[in-house]
Length: 466
Image (cartoon, rainbow, N blue to C red; front, side, top):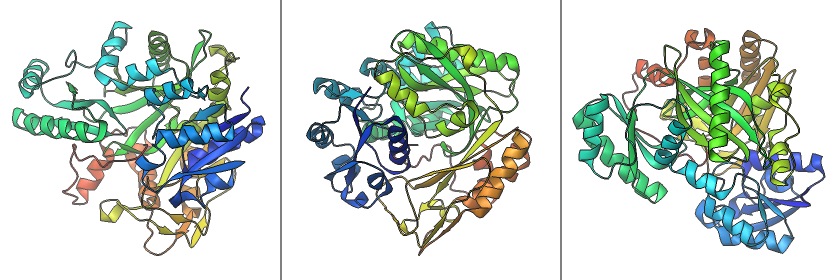
């Protein structure tokens, strides 16, 4: 087992990793920018190293500084959390070159999953259902128009190297496809460094369902059930739950089998997620693989009793999984609400500032993962996530009531600071969500009903690691 782990991240996920390491008797190193010198990740670590200025590309994504910090402190492993360098195969290789274990899948796997067009073909070969679309990337607009004519509108254009809701645009006509193709290739070049895009048929009002995987380096691969992530704003998730409401036992079993088949086709190791769209008739299609721990992993932890970060660390250290599919027996219902420092009434403008009052809720079955305490300052340089409120209850109805109660208790005040708490409570009370009939377009439909004419399917705000 590792002696010391460097946590190459910040905020709530860095705190969450540090806590598991402490329980395992593993020392930790927190790297931080100058903006985070007083952050909670620093407070929870055994050692700290300042690695650069506030800008992420000059600190949390600056590989030389992170590797130097690991070597200087004697860390024998690096946990990247999610976002930043978590799915960077080059970073994983550099870690290996310096004798440092990367807590995540092999770099070859990340290269494959990072190419959305390539992994789509691989999943089809492995027997997973995929949406009609292009066989690979589309070098020209004419290529995109030809595929769209073949499969029919509406279509969705995606960056091959995309992720986090970025590099995606929907088109319902040839003229709209022209705009979507140009905008997506431009975003792909700017954000991901490559303008390659591919195209699929667009499924409106679908369910976004993902399956959690654990795979060791000895050939064992299991799934831990599914999560529903359908409540999104411009493809940024707001509320997640496990299990997914309304799935038949047969579909639930199929999704798990598909996810394990995907893992075996990839040669996957570690914790990962296979994401699907489920249409109104209940038919699933493969969407993508996330080769990292997910923001919403706590809902799976709450219903399975497993610590996914602990499992990640054990697998990276070469240990066997230690449990089989039969051992996975989810109990009850869990819901996660992402509380962001954003103003929903001002087009979700980020609201950084001083947390004069920060009082998270408590009570039965209530967990709050956060990188902040009262008196901290929310910086303007990073993702606006304040906290993840996660609740567990025996039934979905009770879990919804518990989540609403906990959100009502969540008190955040400071100059200029607004949060998404009112929106989250409105979503929990929405009849479609209560009935389990919600879908990926529900939040945008609610916004349009309030006269928000600025909401567009292809208007995607950059997020650091959602």
